[in-house]
Length: 113
Image (cartoon, rainbow, N blue to C red; front, top):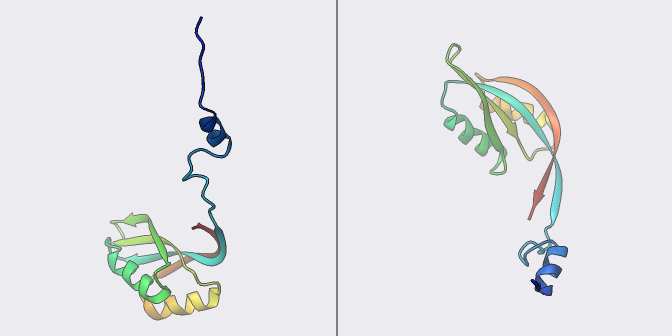
């Protein structure tokens, strides 16, 4: 006969969401922001990322979504902390005179602390 015992504290941790670190309260913050596609000249996006960070702040996120060796350009998907589309377009016009602005949308960001 095999009698198995279990640790009741392990069962309570499992029911409460796992390890004590997992049970920490996480605060979520919802923010509305502007996202857009930006096509810049060249295959290296580092300069464009630096300008985006300078123009929109450190919270700006930029991801490469495509490159074209044929047209020598890189397309980035960018999310800013800005909520005003007109401000975003004005800032892009001032800082990226040779870029092409694609789709511009409002998105909701959820950040966990």
